[in-house]
Amino acid sequence: MRVRCLGNDNMEWMRIELSIEDGLNIHGEVPNNPNPGLDVTAEIMHNSFLSNMPHLEEVNNTHKSIISEISDTIKSEKISSRSNKSLDLFLEDVGGILDNSKIKIPLSTRFPTEIIVETSRNKGNNLVRIMSPEVFGGMIETFKIGENQKISNGKWINDYLELQIE
Image 1 (cartoon, rainbow, N blue to C red):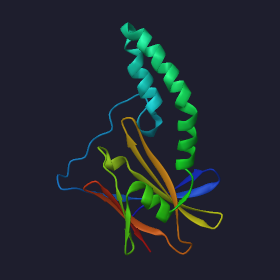
Image 2 (cartoon, rainbow, N blue to C red):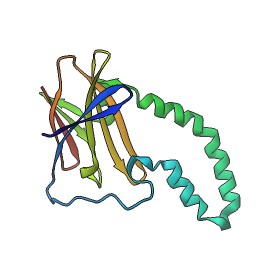
Image 3 (tube, one colour):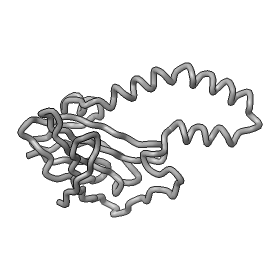
Image 4 (cartoon, rainbow, N blue to C red):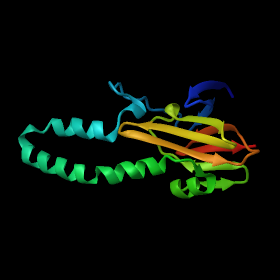
């Protein structure tokens, strides 16, 4: 396990090196994109798609109207989903389980080599952050583990992320 420090919001994040194991031993590469990984938002990809439909201007205008009406709700849900959850709540949200001292999270991805798991300590909480890029954005989740616990290692195997807790 190699650990690398990254500074972020006055907290030290420690990256956990993941081993990648799957039955086929085939790993997708992140497409060459001017905004790769988590920098590409669904909104950017959506706007790119719609900008290539000039013959559907009326549909485009109606669509923009509908999207603007619901964007505030989506934004507040996004902020809420990125707050620091307890491990139990996080597992419930993503359909994961805690099996003895192993966290098992279903994480189907075409780019397992791009999954990032980091840990940090902030205000007495041990935090774990998981970032998994996909073509249309990806996932960022942060959750808390016990005060005397830490993630010792992790691996991605057959569409599951497994994190070992000590």
